Length: 167
Image (cartoon, rainbow, N blue to C red; front, side, top):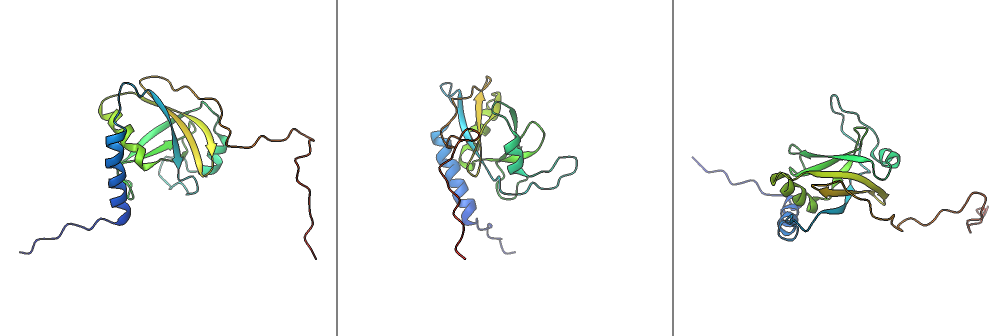
């Protein structure tokens, strides 16, 4: 009887394994690490239809989130792309995306160590959102970032004139 060769890992799977190994060494949870901000990615994808769970547009849900609003972190072991994926779900039960793959190791290690992991929405950023995660305490939001340019006051000229197209 011939032995089966182990399945060949795809390039993406190998990359994910390397990122996790690197992150595990660099980001092992310590008592010094109390909280940090993490990127939430995948906002441009649609939420899958699941029985009993609300679907909705991730980008619209991100726009409805307020800084400081509680978000839930959910491990997705049956995720086909990444078995260690951690979904981020708003307080309304709509998924807004996933924690960046190389940072999931940190959350999983905290869960294994029976540490309490709490998260709040921090802000919308280009391509997704940022959340604030704290270990064994409530997260505290940092001052607002300067990622977005200040918006002009109502009625104030914003420096852009309309130039009609050439006919």
